[in-house]
Image (cartoon, rainbow, N blue to C red; front, side, top):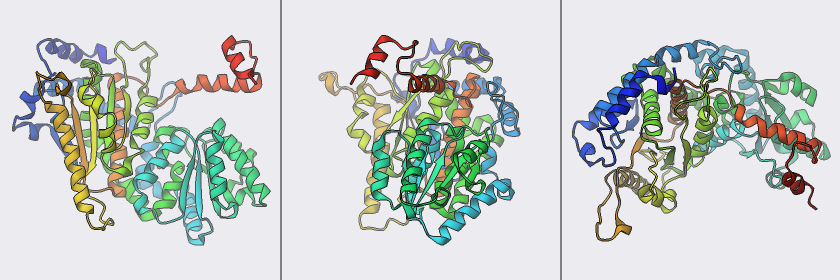
Length: 500
């Protein structure tokens, strides 16, 4: 059942004819709102008091989710039902966060390898070569938890642009650098071309490929054919989508950086969120509630974009990661049965770290004609390892700025004399906060956004686990590589490719 066909959708649309959420001041000063529009899971706090909805609409949205039988769908997904219909696959990334994983051969091979290279301390640099989910996830976590990283410098190469790989060669010693070649299909053009250049560089310096390179893939045979020994190949399930794969061996660089104890706490944070997602009823299920807000803003209030602003520099890569997660998962035009959607799915996800963003696009957020629902993410305390004088005061300013922007967006400020200084307000935001940036809470936060994305897809009745939209451009690129005068190319394309 598509969202447009949900009987509760019609009820909500009818009520919207008699409700006006352009101004929020009549809602946000209600004392009861704090208890009814805030949620907690351990030290993770979710504040949706500044969202453009009242208690009646919130209850309708909860009923909308129940009408889709969302809890049953989540149970099927977790149990291994092949919900990815277009590829006839189950969704396996949840199992990577369970304790049972620690008994598997996959885990033992990964752990033993990480322990071995960490104890020998032969490598001064670790370089992850991947793109999309094979790059963004590990890169984002590396940045988020840099304070907990114990070992060599970890670098990331994704783009086929030769500039980055050139910088790696300048910075790194070939005999002291481990390269992790990450490609689920082991056919990703950008990744394999970069890996080929690295292999030639190592050979030139008389370093064995299997000394300094490992492969992470779901197609073991292709890695063997490429030249990797079996001991240097770390397999991932084909049922783990790239944007959900950082928990697998794709996250080897995360494991190396954090060490086993911190890495397990990272997984525990995600597992804690998963258990809440699976077991909590809809009324208090944080990922479902936030997914309902996505649907509410996107489909009922016609707000086609969603801004994410982390007020912590550690999460500077989080908006880009969340962008791929949501837009590759839910940027679909048909439902799970292939029928054209009657109501659109997936907002445009964008954002930047605060307070930098306040001096950039917040002008648009406050006074632009389009309304952008905004997530404000902030740890309530600085890391305990930060101990310079003034660090607590700086962090207090960070918190003050985060709450001030949420208040300003919601409340506005009327100036009828000078329209340039008139702030309409009514701009919704959600504040998501936690104690501090530890592996546990970063793991929980990442799993929260994954589960919001999945819940949103279930509500839209789309497949959040395939990504056919990335394939057409790749196919045309492969054809061009073989023939720049391919008959299917436009005249302008041929001219561009053949110009000297």
